[in-house]
Image 1 (cartoon, rainbow, N blue to C red):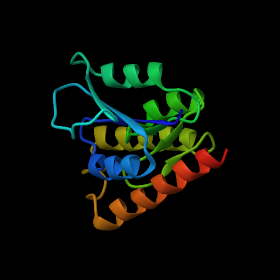
Image 2: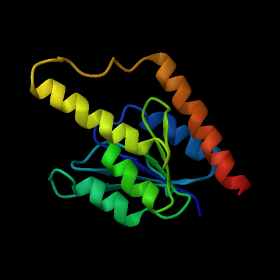
Image 3: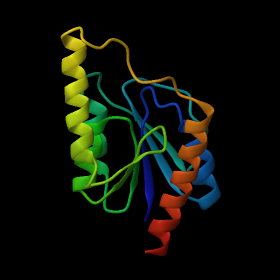
Length: 149
């Protein structure tokens, strides 16, 4: 059955994901390195993993199954979940696919090198209302695509 996993640490679209999940009657698991406030209900579970660099990612990658949805901005986690047949959606509404995740990993590595060398400073642009809107639209579309088979 379709399940949504949220890489909970620093995820700006948890509330939007909860709304979509409730609309479709889906279960959600939020995985994080520390306790956080989440809505109560039998459709939602908070899993707090040990503190560590990839503990939440490892938990999600182990639990996810084909056609589950993972919400994350972590490109290596996205690649691992895609390998298991899951669907992955970034915080700004960009779906990760087997076709684009390799390019995303390469871009991430290049930008990290440029920052390390001092050639480029700063990070991605701030999260905006249009990002939230695109995320909602893409999550809704992803759920419907999976349900149609």
